[in-house]
Image 1 (cartoon, rainbow, N blue to C red):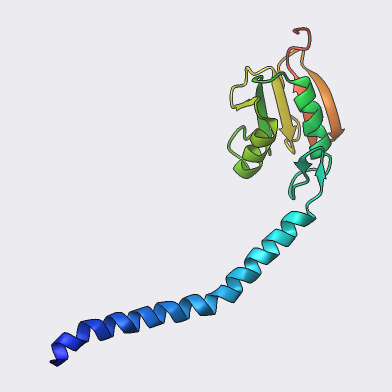
Image 2 (image 1 turned 45 degrees about the vertical axis):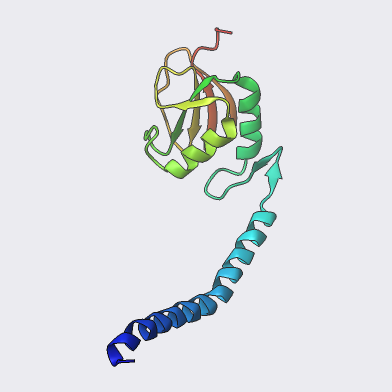
Length: 149
């Protein structure tokens, strides 16, 4: 065989060996990361099926449980996280709320009857609104039309 004919198989073998070595050297790190993630997931405290999550007020699981009791299935809820940033600030927490409130729907519409306020500070709510739940100053549930059923 000529050198040209040997070149392609040798190059393929070298590339395969490099890939195998890279995979073998990274396996322990990947396994350790996976183990760390599993351990962290098992350490999360859940209250009535809702995990306590970093970055949210500690009363969040109980609060969400009560919101689920108050808002009918497929009811619409506006969630504000942060200072007047409806649906735009801290999207990870917005998605987390949306998941735990299913089948209720999270909307950005200010005309929604129910509002959840998380670390918003003072917020102007529609006239006649009533704060239904306020376990902490950072976490409030508002019914904007309390007279309706």
